[in-house]
Length: 243
Image (cartoon, rainbow, N blue to C red):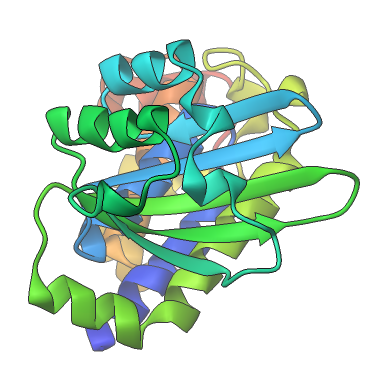
């Protein structure tokens, strides 16, 4: 369980450093892989305005919305007072309520989306969100993990939802226009790199994981529109952004 706790701690830590929707996608995708899943998908619903952040193939998500599957997907359409953690398997579509629902499962399988777990996150004012972790193969080990770790999975889904909700994407600063929006941690990491420290050195100095350092350096590089890490350091020094 240590690696699970480590993955969750890193997930929560990195969420505090996100600026863009792409940042959210990368943090959640990394957490999904650490927990043994191939994909993640976050579906937020505000009135009739759906919002999706996911690592699913874009060809699948485009097909999903083009077919209107969000309107009949049982993961999203079941009564809100049911279990908050919903286990599903694409090969068990016999209980589907309609031909279109069966086609949804069949189409998902054609994209190799086989099974997963969805955390339902109801809220007030006709809002609803769901956080899904999915794989392309069914395994007993994954089944056991899902059964014994539902509290952890629910925490991951709810934490992601809370940060997305707080971000208000319409007000996020676009990638490439964020040089003045580097976080303190990002400036610290770039500053130590400019002093010749390695990522491992920086992690020890700041008391965080090496992957957390890499995430912040990647963010800083993107925010500065730098092509490489040394380029990001040079730009940050030139603009007086480093401590």
